[in-house]
Amino acid sequence: MRVRKILMSLTAILMSITPILSLSIEPPTSAAQSTSTESPSQKPPKKNTPDVDPFLTPYSAVYSTVWKKGISLKVEGKQTLSKKSDNLWQFVFSADSMIASLDETSVFYVEDNQIIPTKYQYKSKVLGKKRSAILTFDWEQNLVHNNVKDKPWNLAINPNTLDKLSVQLQIRQDLKLGKNEFDYQIADGGYIKNWRFERRQRETINTELGRVSAIKIIRVDNLSKGKQTAFWFVPKFDYLLVKLEHKEDGESYQLDIDSFKQN
Image 1 (cartoon, rainbow, N blue to C red):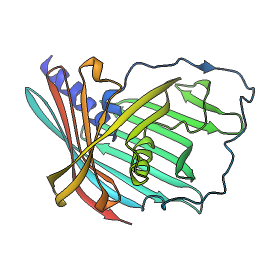
Image 2: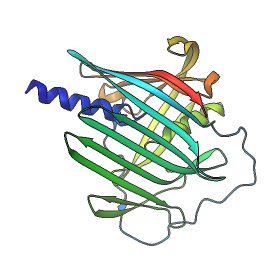
Image 3: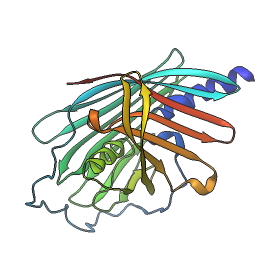
Image 4: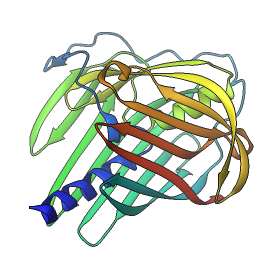
């Protein structure tokens, strides 16, 4: 029984590394699932206003995470941001161990500092058991199409809806624009979920990259449930996430950057 609990905990770690969000997914705020093929609105219009600041620089980073609840387990994860073409970007996160693995990919373009996802893909394997999902965003009809276990569904979405991986990059871009509050709609699991964050004070912290000045962000939509989640982003490194802490029900996760390279 104890071994089984440890394996389940290791699986939770692999989920939690997905900066920022898989470790503390909340119940859906809206069950707007739809199988309609009508067009609620057209694709968000392209504005002529130039970006205030260029989008994030392509990079690769390696993180380690430690889960603590009586015992400590450590898993390594890697994320990479790359440009596929003049318009398309790709953000990838992967984690692997002897008994479990997780891979997530978000393909998107950027318009007026806003990430517009086109495809999100999820794959995991734990003790030989596999899970996968593919979300395809149709901005002409404002729908996201999902195929999970060969059971497709459509979900009506609003402009600026994100997937649960690319939202990390949107927070970083919004930090570059000087925002203090962050409110996002996420398409996940057949629902629209609302994730909210607030900017707090700057802190100087020690990392494997050295002693750095970081902006602290906390997640505020789940505080009533006794959960505490904090993130540290470093302006010096293009607002890269360098640290994450999450606590709930006597257990904790800590994510720390190991290495970083701009591509």
